[in-house]
Length: 363
Image 1: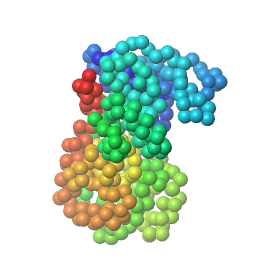
Image 2: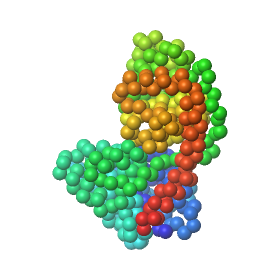
Image 3: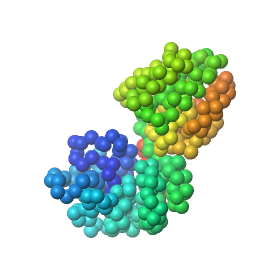
Image 4: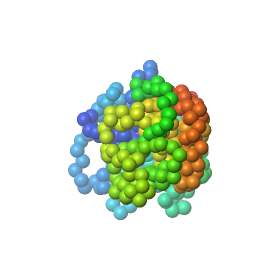
């Protein structure tokens, strides 16, 4: 099986760090695929430049975790949204070519492959929704010639609304070693936690306001992360008289975050965003997850089964959920047990295998 993956979500050199926006999500699929017998994988790492006048350093192929990566410079024509490349496309024939991110589309359409897939990220959907009707329809016609993949259940719904059908959801996974077997421990005090950038779309103010209305339970709320809203959120806690219950821990390293998750009970983040690995990391440490309906975690979490889902804009709904379930420890224990079982399906190895089986089955 010969696979080409085209993406801008890779660094351009062996010793470079991954872009903050990229994380290791796509690479984690690739490093698993190259372990499979008979697989030849080429990653084309796109990097855009403002124009051709800049001196672009020569980038050589390199190997990372067994994955061969070829840097490909893409140039933007000034004052337009047009891109081109001097890179000579490989004459190699592929069984499968996959594009991740909108900038890869033209490259994907030109590569020699028996089957082409395009994986939508939330940024791709946002771009399409922001285009003029004429431009959006032109892109939609191009996408209809490809097999489409979504990076979350929420993105799949967004594509449906645009008249596009996603055939598969390629969710990221977590290392199997992060999953612990943790018994239900909630008794007379509940430790809530969130790990997030303190920005509007995370809706942390809604969580704070909702918790402030819970008077019949002993609780605390740990907020890990920083951002432009930190001062505003701290002032909100003071206004609501709950500063003694809410801890702002700032930015912590991964090991410290995992330690905090091990000592918390409920991870609550009703965020308007695509799928976030932090939900799985919280589940892996025995936390019950409360997420937002219709966004990234919806589909992984089933409401009332292995977690809870509420509207990201309805404070009353979250308050009602908290008041009912916090007093029902038997229900919470049942949900946590199911969550611990389900998270084992989302290891890096298992999600990579599901993704691979889908693209192979389509060839």
